[in-house]
Length: 326
Image 1 (spheres, helix red, strand yellow):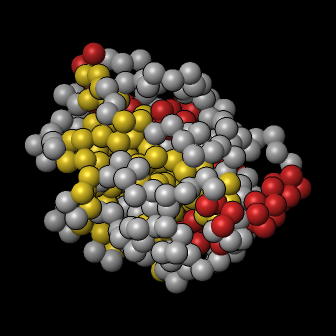
Image 2: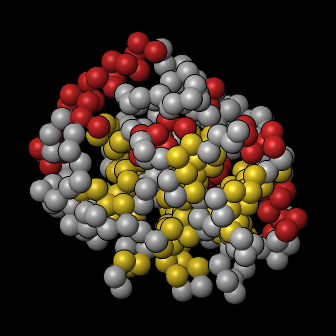
């Protein structure tokens, strides 16, 4: 388990240096990944790949999850965050972060569409992808590797590595392929069930985990992210400040909240209070209120986006646009 609450800064630095040095060439990973084609990759600096602690599948992804009816009033604290997926013609589904915190990937099928609901706690990156690539259905697991502190997923069919924050294969047979990103968002359980009384919520997985607890207590107020050696974001923005990313543009959440929402660059970004930070208190439901963001286009349709930490946006979109307003 990756837990940063009690790790001293010197130990974090030492772990980063050791992991970076050990992973400076793909040969270091070959024994663990004999079926991965390391000759095909977009990674130019292998020092960026670090072990996050757990081995391959040490964080177990969930396959074919079970669901409960919202009408059955599952016992979840109302302020706790869920990832919401609303597919046309299908009952809306909520995937509680209390489960994604410990599993990071859920392989599901909604209306015949294979999807992967993913969450990287260390980047606060929550994204939902289609699992169908060129007619081939993939299923994803957690590799145990990090790059810029972001989870590297792998597909079980080719053992290729996929960067979660960008949805792109960076090592292996699938290198260069990008997954189709679906609109999904984080909101509170209360907000989901008020809007979707006919909806579904993912049931508790059959694992022995401390569901409802945050093993990264205080992470989103730390001065530095865990196992990240890159540059800080520009403009004096804290590395662990949340930003709303749409494509290669990032809006600081502080601006969205202070202005009560923003409409620009072809998007309408709203903010509503009532959602706890999953990365604040040791008990998720006691996390501070960071609110809920929705992103829509000019036609009022939901737009794929992310609500990740600023350091991750800067790492993966170094030339991206910071939407700071006037």
